[in-house]
Image (cartoon, rainbow, N blue to C red; front, side, top):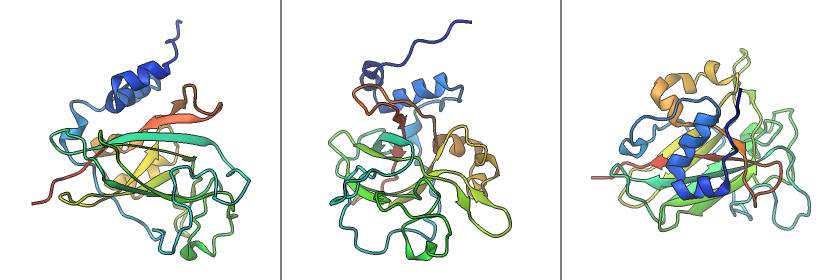
Length: 230
């Protein structure tokens, strides 16, 4: 059986973020989203109990390092790229994109997760914010978050990253991004509240990142559509 040739950096950058997502999904056997995905708003989800509430001295888009420390965060390095668009598929420039997540061990750097026996990672930034560029683009480097118990009844949350996106003239969006192929996805009580279509739109297939990205890192595309206010 012949194998598809690897997706090149030129392929990914040349076709744009949305089409790149389709290329990656096809290679991993996932269903590509039919039609223009930007034509409908991204589904809202809970922010959870761990939205950052205290001052963060470091908020740049590389979560694998903490300013003033020489160590590197533990875990698998991933690169997430996407665009923020409106319902007419136009780019939303200068949108504020906030992200937060658990570390590779499945623990949040948050006071409400203080009783979690899993270790903190002093070299993991855990939160970041960035503004989209003129084409609505954003990009950040982080580690794949670990899963963790969400209650004492056996519910284990799958790896996910929280997003909060805001821009004047648009409804603020809080949502979550999931990882394709995770066994815990189908049993997750939060993800199960979504339709099959919306589950697919917030689930990202990752592939080995093309050069010049760090060897061993993985790359995925997550586009977001905001709903205009008024």
